[in-house]
Image (cartoon, rainbow, N blue to C red):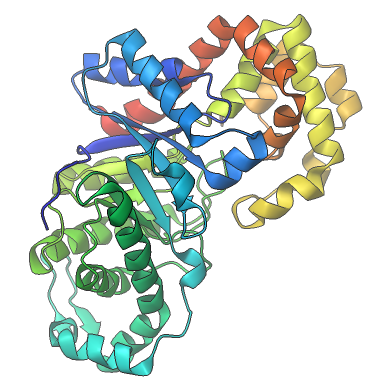
Amino acid sequence: MNINMKLPKYSIGVGDRFAHQAEAQLRACVLAADAGVDVIPVWNKSNREHLIIGSEPSSTRRAADAAVRALGWKRPYFVDADHINLKSYERFLGPCDFFTIDVADKIGQKSDPMQIKDFLDRHPELMGDLAIPRIAEPFQIDRAFAEKTAAQYLAAVQHAGEIYRALVREKGEGNFVAEISMDETDRPQTPPELLIILAAISDEQIPIQTIAPKFTGRFNKGVDYVGDVPQFAKEFRDDLATICYAIERYDLPDNLKLSVHSGSDKFSIYPALKAGMMEFDAGVHLKTGGTTWLEELIGLAEAGDHGLALAKEVYADAFAHADELCAPYATVIDIRPAELPSPGAVDEWRSEQFVSALRHEEGNSSYNPHFRQLLHVGFKVAAKMGARYTDALEQHAEVIGRNVTENLFERHIRPVFLA
């Protein structure tokens, strides 16, 4: 498949809930370039986040463009319409050139049995003992397994095709980067299932440049990976081999790469990402890296006085409305209420206590992942503050920006992308 707008090898999704940190985020990519590696920023913000904040996709584009101008960035960059579907894509058409097509809610939806039969008849090569280069054991795929996999995923891929063609009608073919996301579901996709999915994507003529499967383990928001790290490493490596094979077999874009969603702060699996990328000379899209919203709170707390008071207020309100805030993110957070400090206790904290509890440093005995996860989903509290919050971001821009850049570069870009 031919594509005009091409996503480079290494890219990082950077969320910026309140559109104030684009320059600080881009500085991290500048540091990577200075170190000899191009890591391309992709500013992402979902329709749900825009609705909560009360913002428009055009604000993300303006912030990204302004940062690029300010820092003289000459490399590519993108603005991602994150997790769009047929109901939400239209508002992103103008500002965005990267579209994450989310079909997780279509996984498991029944397909026409004749369409499943036609798919299997088109792809007899998927069945049998299938040797994939650089995977030790052949995939053993009988017709029953292929039929079960097609029944699980074919409708979702066909829906992705419907969304992709709607985008093409509006933006023109080759004028945007397409990603398919299947990560927000209960069950991981195995490498043999991924191969069948990629064959179906090829049938739909979707020139995807990244795919976000559901991996083994939990990818909770803003905290480390929870699961079997060696199993993840094997699965990630085998997925890379599967993609290499599928690119050749199904004429998919030669830059197709894995996207690791909720990839921020998954420090324990970063060595596995790095090892797989080096072995296969492969790219990866790390999304979202850096949890910028939490770095804003850390910066406010570090600033002390008014900034610290505002950070404490955000926590107190989040604590009071925890059930409401956590409900939409139930599958990607694990918070033990008993481990949350009371707002009264937090109100007595000094700056360094708040920062130590929130900053993700596993070796720090004061670090509290439950406190961190609640604040991660608590951005709605800051959104309700409106100008009170954004004025504080501007007042303390220097200390916040330093935290944003350092966190993104040192904790995310360096371990994943740099030698």
